Image (cartoon, rainbow, N blue to C red; front, side):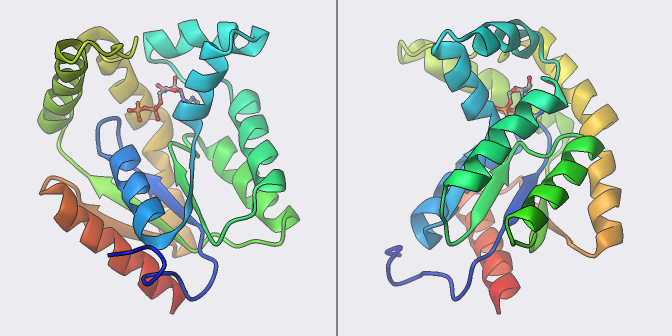
Length: 206
Ligand code: ADP
């Protein structure tokens, strides 16, 4: 459907939560196209910083390649910069927050900028599918002659999953306790998952 005819009735801020390979980026792009929201992907911002060759970019590149999390200070700074400079009818946080400290910082930033967090959607996928998707993504990129992400290999992926379960999964309980949490089965077809997400986002604006 055309974004202009399917727009939101009010501003809505959404977090997509889920392990690496759950499809957060893919789904965020669809919400951008269909609902005119703005995607804030800390992974993309960090890859841009890395490509720009800045000091910060160089520091984070190695950490990311190993599949470890970048420091809270760096990612919170990136998000703060966007939240204070970009106007949107809704943000989709993709890959942020990833720690409890980041979640607390996001609350404070939203409050400071006069915004609310409306809904946190957990994309649920089992581990075997995650590994298949990420290994498949690397193979496809390679076959198409495109660059393969430095962290899309089995060793870094194992680390990314460990980091997720240790540091990010606790956010599920955190947002459940706040009454913000919704779940989506993210193992089906992209379009059907997108339909579920879009329905949740629209309900949140009602
Ligand atoms: P995926 O979810 O597929 O692992 P992302 O593009 O979201 O991919 O993240 C890639 C890497 O970027 C992470 O493994 C981590 O090193 C870094 N990163 C992204 N977002 C954050 C964050 N909020 N906090 C710390 N590190 C982050």
